[in-house]
Length: 70
Image (tube, rainbow, N blue to C red; front, side, top):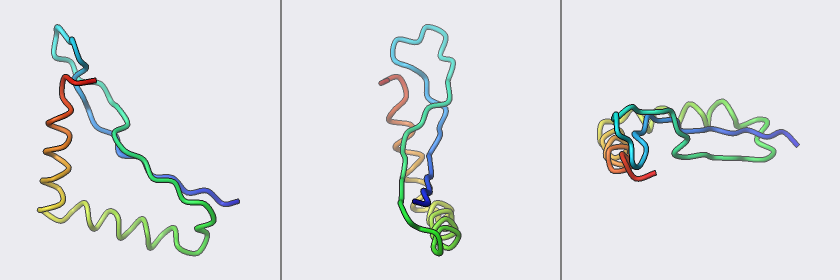
């Protein structure tokens, strides 16, 4: 079937890092099978939600809390 996937990628400082260097990590993923007709509107809505200040702040806090944990 037609698969559509979205990934949230963030720069995360790994656990035990001695230099504090951040690396790109996948922190979230969404997979949908058979979304042929809906993929573009769904992706647009997802990005619109992430652009909202309240939602963006939540995502930033989640990324901040992941620093040095993994």
